[in-house]
Structures are given as C-alpha cells and as structure tokens.
Amino acid sequence: MRIALIGHGRMGREIETTARERGHEIAAIVDKDNREDMDKADFLGADVAIEFTTPESARANCRDAMLRGIPVVCGTTGWLDQQLSEAQSLCDETGGTLLWSPNFSIGVAVTRLLSNQLASLMNRLTGYVPTLKETHHQHKRDHPSGTAISLAEDLTARVDRLTGWQLGIVCLPDGQTLGSAETDADKLRIDCLRRGEVAGIHSVSWDSEDDRITLTHEAHSRRGFARGAVMAAEYAARHQGLLTMDNVLEDLFHTK
Image 1 (tube, rainbow, N blue to C red):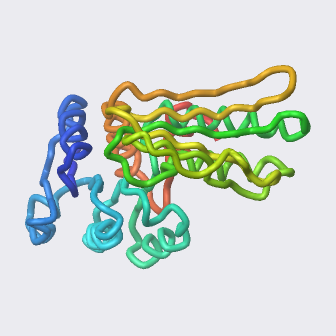
Image 2: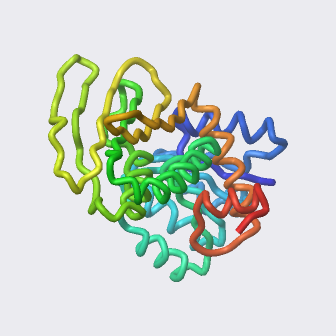
C-alpha cells in the first residue's frame, strides 16, 4: 500500500518507520513547508494519507486530501473532539473517507471497550465513585488529554448519576498544582499529571468504602500509537465514510 504522510514530526517519523516495517511504501511526505506537493503525482497516487499535524491546520489538510480522492486517517486532536458533525460534513462534501481518533493505540481501544462494559455494570452500584487520571510527558500542553475526554464521555453516557466530567487536579512539570479534588457530585473528576517523557497512562478507578477497582493502560512508547495508525490506514483504504477505531477493532476481532 502507498501511504502519504501529512506531518513529519515525532509521530510522523514513527509512523514512517512502522509503515515500512509492515511492508508499505511511503508515497509522499507533506509538511508545513511543502503543502503544494499535495498536487504532485506522488501524493495523488497514494492509497491513503495519515495526518498528524496541528489543530489549526488539520481540517484543511484532511479536506484537501479528501477532495483529491484520498482516504485520510487523522490523529490530530483538538479540532474534532467536539465536532463530529463537521467530520461527517467533510465526508458528505467530498464523498470520501475520514478515520479520526484521539488515540490510535490498539491497547487504548481495547481499554475503552472494557471501561464501557465496566461502566454499564457499575451503573447499578451507586456506592462506587468513578475518577479518571491521565499522565503524559512534560511537553504536552493540553489537559485533559483527548483520550481522557473520550474515555470520560463514554463512561458518563453509561452512568445515570453522572451528567458529565470536570477537570480536577492538574500537576505541572514545574511542580505547580492547579485545580481541586472537590468535584460536583454528578461529575466525573479527571486528574492530570505532566512529568518526564511519559508516553501516556490512563486509569479509570471506581472507589467505594470497601474497595477500589482500577483499569489502567500504560503506553511504553509512541510505537503503539504508530502501529495502530498504520493499521487504521490499512482499514480506511478499503472503506468509506466517517470511521473510528471501533470499526478497526470490529474488523480485527470480526465482531459487530
């Protein structure tokens, strides 16, 4: 398969390595200084594009690739997190394919499925209070992470006593602590920690007077995200419309 890369930062370079290891060809690499290459034969001959850039440029990148008939896998967070209708509009406008996810790790996708199943069970056990904690490297500026928000929204949709999520304690790399553990009773608290070069840790806990249940995913490196993004590209190249990692998992496990 011929893959075009849009964005060639740390994730883009990791994806390039992983794609080659899986036997794919890198058809073109487009970054902020050579967007005109999207009109060149190498890019136009790609089977799929993988986009990891910035929230400010992601929409235009995805739209431009889709208008050129190229399916897009997008991992840029901060632009579609709350705008899935815009993603659908892009697909309708171009007749193309957009597979978007805040996290392409297969392990995170499985963790999300398990968290959803657990939340449905815990909905009846009102003595348990859920919280969510995410830890990332010191360079990550946004908090909570897109993955944490996705986990939180899925969880609160399944628990009748919760109406949404609320930012709790934020620990910054310089030791500064913001926020508070005091949270509205009907909100899921998300705590955030920034330290070192942590690739990503997400934990969902259910705490009661008697015990605590915790579900944790810990990424060892960016490699898992890159592998998942390439697997998503392999899927997107064969399907149409607005897609998510749920579709990739269904295909992987042959379940509906």
